[in-house]
Amino acid sequence: MRRLLFILLTIFSLGNIAVHAEKVNDCIKIVLQQTVPGDYIPPINKEGGPVVHSIYMPIVDAYLYNNVVNVSFNENIESATITITNETTGETVYSETCSNPVTLNIDLNGEKSGEYSIEIETDDIFLEGYFNL
Image 1 (tube, one colour):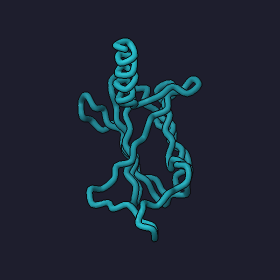
Image 2 (image 1 turned 90 degrees about the vertical axis):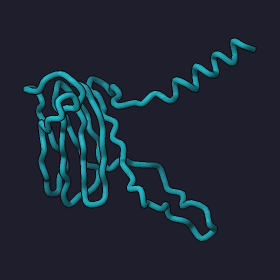
Image 3 (image 1 turned 120 degrees about the vertical axis):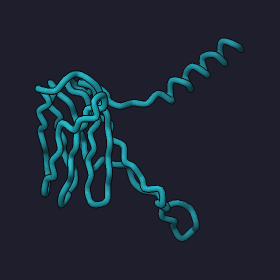
Image 4 (image 1 turned 135 degrees about the vertical axis):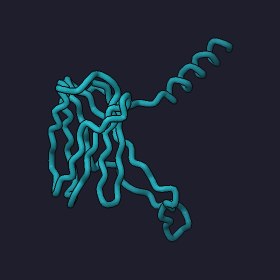
């Protein structure tokens, strides 16, 4: 019984580990999380329960391959601001506002090793992710 309890506690505690990036093929997928404003109220359907949505399809995907960040937009977006910051030094190493972006390749070969953050902001969405060089 103690062994079973130990195994269950171990499994549940491992489930709380934050994931910043995951390896996909030879590149690393940067996990982007959407920040929701503090005054956001979820939509309610006629029966009083929350509105059920279909499977989540990310608006933006980001990958790291050989110190190049690839950002792919899965929807038509009028404009987006992409900012990459070295979290160790606080220095912004890349910042650009793009009109109607589809894909961007951001070369970080000249940058130092360390932890970096990427922020992608559109008119109504703010995404943030972390990765290591």
